[in-house]
Amino acid sequence: MSLQQRISALIRDVPDYPQPGVLFKDITPLLHDAAVFQAVISAIAEQAGPVDKVAGLEARGFLLAAPVALELGAGLVPVRKSGKLPSETYAETYDLEYGTATIEVHRDAFEPGDRVLIVDDVLATGGTAEAAASLVRRAGAEVHGLSVLMELTFLNGRDRFVDLPVHSLVVV
Image (cartoon, rainbow, N blue to C red; front, side, top):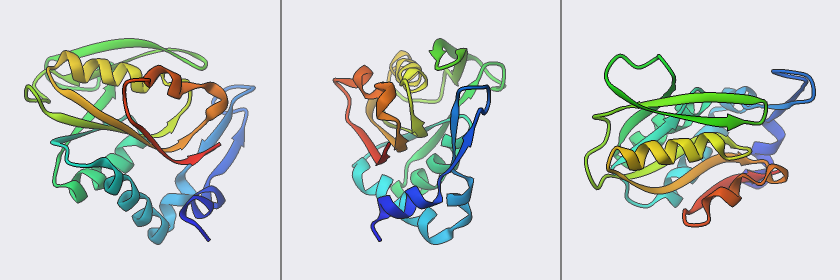
């Protein structure tokens, strides 16, 4: 079985979560399988190339970004929901599939010229990742690429990143 098939078999669909009409893609069964989880981390790291920092998007992106950063020998930068970081931040508000949200990053998280890989579990409409890319650039770093476990193509999120490499392990 291919890695894509193994991943797909472990992603659970949860209808009407977090609200009616949304089909949530639950990755926790994948996280329970150590072999597949390790294969996912290795696959993301292999395609990343050399980077200085890995930016993990709250919350499930943290679960992937931390081990990817370790495997790449890069620093980890958490991109958090508004009000969760203790020091001075840059903030960016964006649209979700079902509302709006604001994410933040510490102002001192990146050095000028840092090459940054953004990591998240799902690319849906692309709003969160686009906001994260904007934060990285505002902090003076360079977005090297976006890596996700799963891409929901019917929401056209990739269209926001015509000038940025996007890597998805599973395309739905």
